[in-house]
Image (cartoon, rainbow, N blue to C red; front, side):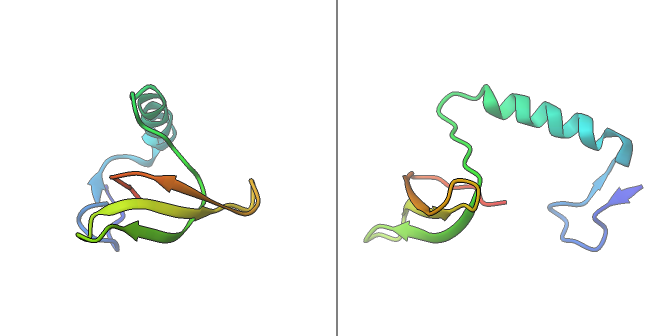
Length: 79
């Protein structure tokens, strides 16, 4: 079965729904043990860029933590 058929090719995949929880747990484990990777949950309110157009950070908002906070970074993955 092809998952996410209505979405773009980057998220389509031939796998069964039954492995979804297993995959999610395996990826969370992998990411939490990746050096120099910080995982932040919240809404991206702004992406900061420098004079050359390179990412320099993000502004996040979270209902869980309340308010906004700033994260300085050179790379961002938004999902």
